[in-house]
Image (cartoon, rainbow, N blue to C red; front, side):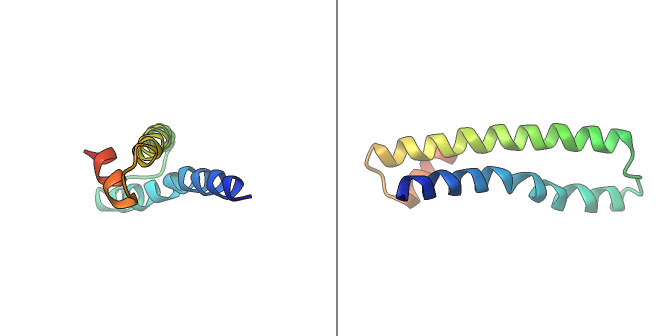
Length: 81
């Protein structure tokens, strides 16, 4: 049961990265007075893919660091460096 919760948490973390990308995209479109057209949508899809891939890589590295015996804080720091 605990393993299923950990998997669910990992999936939730990956799924939350795409909406967080909108936090940066929308203000930039408004700042530069650009419309949310085809190019913006295409860029947003690309950004979501990059964020997803980077999140998966980062979570796997954190899991490996924790398996190697590091505590949570140091595992995150080592994975991001």
